[in-house]
Image 1: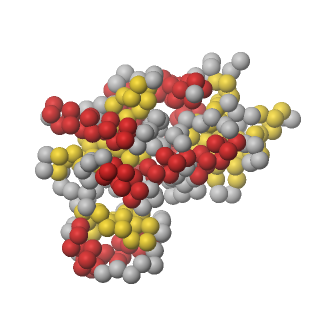
Image 2 (image 1 turned 30 degrees about the vertical axis):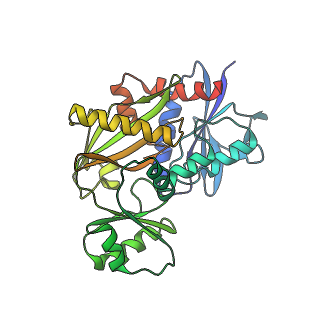
Image 3 (image 1 turned 45 degrees about the vertical axis):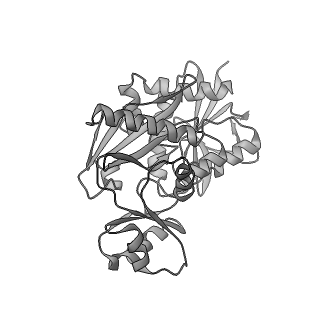
Length: 325
């Protein structure tokens, strides 16, 4: 009997349109000989199952079931493809955990930890992992611009602490522009991370649990046409994503070991894609994403393809891993 898989997509953040694309690709590539696949749109105004004819069926939030033609459908596994809130920050995962529904993501705690840039940095720092100098602010805090500049220097990055896809990020060159950048970040989150600018080669590294083992995927070099790897560079073709990265064998070994250390230090088990910058010859951890883009053009699937893993195998492995737990 085929297992029923709910692919959740959408979400409540600025990333919901990207998530809908990722979820659609997952639905397309899951093996229909093994699974009955259901596209579940979780949006601010509705939770619905959307069938192949775009007919919508409301989700019963009391048990995450759906009634289709008088049949109540419950799900064997939830495949989480929601970037941002509430799928990537652990909120929705906690709901599935309470209901006892298996899901492809990590635990709600670990999802929340990795989504919170400040908290995640505090953990990897304890393991001696190099990262940029940073300064934290909460909405409403009083601050002195000079103190921030003295700590992180200029230029620096102002980031919304809990946001993805480069929403709420500004590269600041002048102290006088800091306030404006903070206003941009606070539109996305009430917590802000201000980081020093690290000059060097940027790489993105996917690490997954595949067939029972932690697997580091081929490294991607990020070359942005813009000032940094912003939303336009990520999603509107304003960058080169070169896999494998044009780095030395020594650098490759360095970042492979570091990526695996970050993954295991955070005790992750699902998908992950983390960014690193080589500064003064040392790879520095920037941030990690536990619900990375899943379209064929996205970085993690590109890396999987280079490793000889198809989308069907990549997604199916996550479902089978979840079913076996």
